[in-house]
Image 1 (cartoon, rainbow, N blue to C red):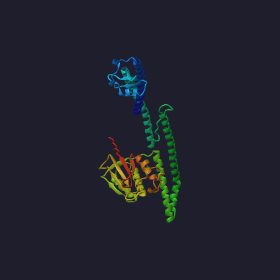
Image 2 (image 1 turned 120 degrees about the horizontal axis):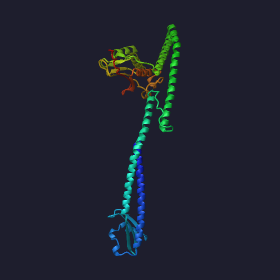
Image 3 (image 1 turned 30 degrees about the vertical axis):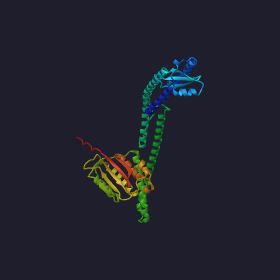
Image 4 (image 1 turned 180 degrees about the vertical axis):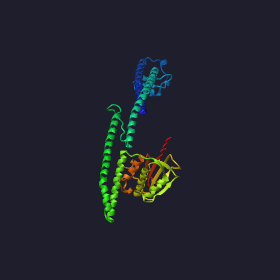
Length: 405
């Protein structure tokens, strides 16, 4: 904005200076023509040979134009030496009579005017540009604060607010109020949704427990197995909803312990129920919450198995013997990849993605992302160049607790 202000002031000053220059020069030329014609009138009829300007010095254009009319003609010669002159000429009885009016003083006055105009314009720019820069920086800081707050809200910090800035009616003040109002409405809506989800899940637990017990008492058979399977699905969905509600409420805390990842990942894969190709570098040990990390990996593997295609791969990289500064666990399938909305916005409950990724409730990835936040890990989603979905869990370094002395 400061650059634009400087350009605007410079252009405006230059335009005004040019207009003044042209207006002054026009007045000077008009006065020169009038004076030159007056001098010509005084000399007509009383011209002596020694007063006549040599024909070689008369501008050819002036002589040619005088032949076309019986009235006096004028011509301004800025290159005439030693000073610019205004010529006036007229043919009288076949003889060309000319008169000169020197315009050196007018030329000096015009040059002085141009210098003063330049100094005034430079002074105006020197004063206004710092003021414009200060005003632009002040407004820019307020706008950057609003942008940072909007990014925080978009990232999930629903308590972030810009607060009142500036006077009422100011554009930035109005923008700040609009963003804060939007954040209030969004926070109210999301918390209402979270409370509804938690209430529904809690209300379902009691009748669901009775339904599970009743299903176990049914006589064995094909229909019974179908009922038991649907009851298990309903129970899993209810537990997932309860877990999501706890993560949304941010009441979950992690219990960090040292976890040898080679053994831990092996046990997770052994319990998963389908083939997973393992690739582990070294024997890394990391401090994390094993229950939550198991939940993350299990959900990522189940999602890859359900919506992708074999082979499903789980890799651990960045580790060496002992503790590590950071470590990445990568889950990859060879299916159609993640849908664009998950890559752009991340997972969301009850959003199952593109049809080719299969059907589901959209809770598995949401839970994995929430648990990753609890343990301070970063969960990223992407697609492989040669096809397939990739989920990366980057575990931070959690320092060992200092023993008491």
